[in-house]
Image 1 (cartoon, rainbow, N blue to C red):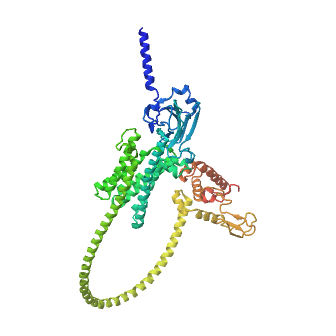
Image 2: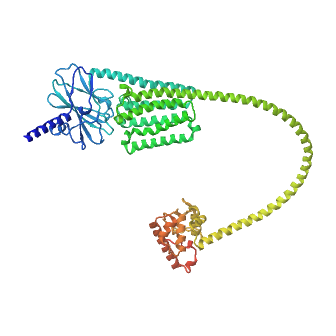
Length: 634
């Protein structure tokens, strides 16, 4: 008996649980104009491998895998998964109205809507911002698909969704007549909003052409960027500006939002005169701009997913808002008051969007709360125009005050000038008398100077003769120093810096080789003719008979070397000075050349030293340059 009661109780609880978890069916009547599906009226299924089709998800096998939405409207938590959603509508026996399903989020990349017919077959409608706008069945900024009511039937509609961006699944059932009325009203308000942007832009363009104040130009760029961002965010831009370029939809809102914040930074910095008044705040603005630019570049080139992170705009906005507050409260700068009010309204709109993103219900303006950011932008446009006007008025007052101070200063200067002229007249008369007396004294001094100049000319001739002798001695001394330096280079170890002073470049090295190679005049290796002319390369010689052009390094230890000539010189010097004991590792450290290259070329030098020692007695007493003429094929 207890088991029977227990089984009955468990059955009741299971029935209640199933009834609680069961999907809510939305009844359709002609008395309603629209219905927004929410919470358990929407069920969802995540297909992580994107392999399921409508046949699988609509089958009884997958029916239990759908989960009721615990949020007002579900989203695609994982961007690379395919999501299936379904809603159920109960149709009456008759309906006099035509119905459509509308999806509010127009940023969804790929969306397929499946509508069943009376035979249980599904007809698909493909929409999304990855397809050209003209291919939509109904031309509207949102995704709209028509549905066919089936009398006295409970119909299940399926939605397949793929999107690289966050997709809010806001599904609305609307009567077609109500849709037309709603769309006309919505486009009417859009026209007012974008019309105001164009009117404000044109008005400020005329003001810029009239007064040539750059604030107006920056403000125009900010307004146009803001308008393009709003158009890309609400789908108007895709419908009217780039309908044939759906790939632009992914980047448009991020790029236009970046331009809006950038021009807002430039406009605010110009209006607050930060360049002259506060260098620190100007650097903060510059840092915010650089950060936002780097963030955009990374988003476009490496991490496209970052385009959906709109909270990054808080950084430049906080810089602008903070600078406006500082200028108004601390600097007492009058035009900053309108900036504070304007960005306060924008902060209100942004706060509402953040709360909406966090799914916190707050509707301070009722149904108009959805357009709070747009309304904030309209008020901001008005207040920023007032700020520019106030800035011009402030500059005009400063100019008038400066002109008044200038006029007053000119009057004072005139008085000072008159007093100064009178004083100068008296002083000129006094100085004239003094000059007459001084002229007599100067004439006497001039006679004495002429005598002294004559003596100086004689001394100058003597000094010139002495300088000539010193110049000759200096030339001889320089020659002796050069000989001593060369002898020092040839006799003992010096570092590369000191060595380079003797052979600073390739030209000096090649000249040294040429002098040593052709010390006994030129003789062609091909025809033994001794006549020559200048060759194609530096210090090369061309045979006048056979035309053979012999380079400086040909038939020397430096032939075919790829090393810099002065480093090759120094390596020969080091190997020769160390009698071949220096290691290739040490040569690599000294010359900054790879060890393998140093080993190969030092081996070539050691071989030349051995060949030179075989053919010359007391070879070790000769200088390091003695092996330059040793050729490996000699």
